[in-house]
Amino acid sequence: MEQTELRELLTPEGLRLLDSLPRWTAATDVVRSVAQLRKAGHSPVLVAAVLHQSRLRAKAEAKFGPFAERMLFTTAGLEQATRLSVAALHAGRFRDAGVSRVADLGSGIGADALAFASLDLEVTAVELDEVTAAIAAYNLAPWSTASVVNGDATAFDLDGIEGVWLDPARRSKGRRLNDPADWTPSLDFAFGLGERLPVGVKLGPGIDRDLIPGGCEAQWVSVDHEVVELGAWFGSLARPGIARAALVIVNGRSAELTAAGDSADVEAGGIGEFVYEPDGAVIRARLIGDLGRQIQGRMLDPQIAYLTADEAVATPFASCFRVRETFAFDERVLKRELAARGIGVLEIKKRGVDIDPAVLRKRLSLTGEESATLIVTRVGERRVALLADRVS
Image (cartoon, rainbow, N blue to C red; front, top):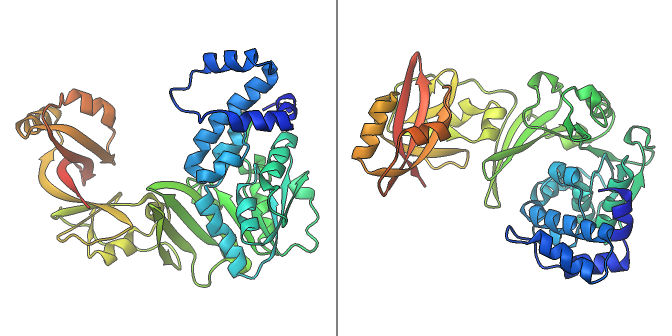
């Protein structure tokens, strides 16, 4: 969003017009909407701004729920913004650690600052980009404990601040920045603060683990089986004795695996009646071994993140499948066997093998009314296909 669009939007007329628009859906006729708004006398800049915001608000519902209806966004800001449910967990850490004055350095549109303020913590959101800072100020306006500073996070005076939250910007002008030194603020700056203050740093879940410093708690978080972030926690925000954690949130309910470090894997063994696919947060945190011991399971292969067991054990940390049959991975055999069973709906999972599930599904020419899951993986040097059913 350009400054001219923002100036038009942040007026009584602009905000009233935005709130008056019908909810954006996939069926929204953009051309017709533009024509109607222009006919009503609204400027081209304002029309573009409100329709863009309407579309972003609809997209933001997945992260912010009903709060999205009164917020403003940028495309990049929404993409990087923390889900409100996860931001609430961040804020809870600060509150529980007794940190009441927080600096949110590189606040973006203010998602985490909103969560801090909602817990009555005093938060200062610092954002370098002028447009994004203005949007953060709008989003945080209802909270008296929140303020916004348009400035350089690395130059912000931390005098009187008790704890810091950072979500370094990892994109610039639509381009992903791979070097942590180019992030805003840089990773070295963020981790350096952690040496002297209670600090939380939000990072991408796929970050090189060698960059994670010792002495911090690294917590991978998944929401509805999508790994959304790695939180690095320092000082009083880190829990004693915990260096690795996998927080799994499904349908609003959470469960967590924690350990003092990466867990040793369980032994590999033969394919049992059940196969478990660990949640991505468990895999990223390297706690598969601890999960395997919880379910009394074994690895399918020492190098592949699947577990197998002879009994079904309910766990929030993995999806469970009952194995019907095991085949050598041969497309002709699979096509014949699936057709014989009338399987027309097939979920395909793969790990450790170079296949494209969408291409494979097309080649299998599925017909029939039955459904199943096909797990294609490697056991030693063999490629195998496990025909299975999900266990709820």
